[in-house]
Length: 266
Image (cartoon, helix red, strand yellow):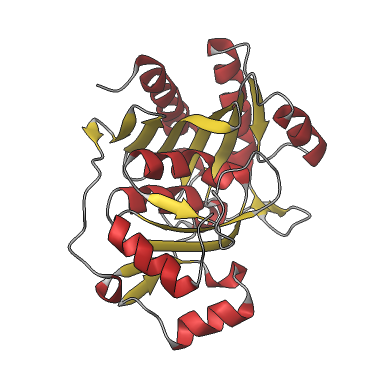
């Protein structure tokens, strides 16, 4: 059974997303932030709605949202010992704006320097990925079980974001890929969850923000998967600095993947 708090969180996110996002899907409008990323009306409305609802349900927990200022985000992180919601109101905004149905709402609870709960909801497919530390991960009502995939790295499918990798690594992957095929869908939180569900075999991203990966990385971890940075460190760190991630669900494939990448796990 899904833990009560996690079930409450998932239901809250589903209700708000189903109310606010379908009517604004394929809006073709928005503005660019200082880092060049797109923000739409939907991002702002979703973040405000989530902030209000989470504050009503859990008034003692602060909120860090992607659409907050850097200063406000940093202040929220200072409360991570007592708990802070890490919110990406629309992960995959470019897809959402263009009418590509690969986007999600991502909410993770950070406390004591780790993610304790996470929910990633895909309104297009009505798929809700949820995880609670030490208690498991779920896709809707089905538990995601750790299992070995009968596919070696050489026959696998990879989710790779080439543009955020160092040029030398990106060139090597393009010229000598160790896997059979490659995809890049454009929503980090969903990438983690699709990996956790066994829909691909390996994952690589060079620079993802805390709100991109907090919830999804817990889903993968609780499903039995593994992840490290390109420097061999644990991916999660309560910081606004971008983090790289190399991951796989199957432990044997993970070993092959990090070996090919030349990562020494610390």
